[in-house]
Amino acid sequence: MDVVLNRLAGRSPVAESRLADVRGDVDWAFGAPTLGEIEKRLHHLDAPWAAAALAALEAASPQSLEITHALLARGRQYTLRECLAIELALTRTTIRTPDFLEGVRAALVDKDRSPHWQRASHGGRTLQS
Image 1 (cartoon, rainbow, N blue to C red):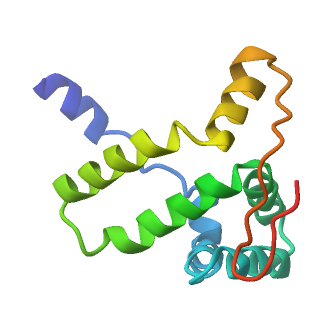
Image 2: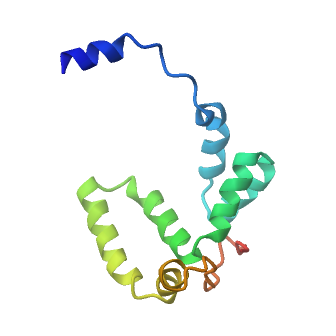
């Protein structure tokens, strides 16, 4: 193990990542309090990575986005064990919803990658797909 560590220690530092270059904008966009505000901020940035992120959000299940956003926002006040218990309970509920079933149909059954999500409002706006 010492041989491997010594070999790695002799290498030059890793070059800056593309993420590091846009970290401030990522933090600003995704630090918004609502999904609707995240969407507005991504539109405002007018950058290729922001457009790609917006497209990914628009393709995702609105229900899953709401759940994930809530988990991330509330998770700061819980321990890891509590977060995992909450996620397990939500998973047990979520797998019975129409959006989950539609996602499985689109990805695994028909493989058309064209889910028809039930629409949910995000902070007064609806993400379009």
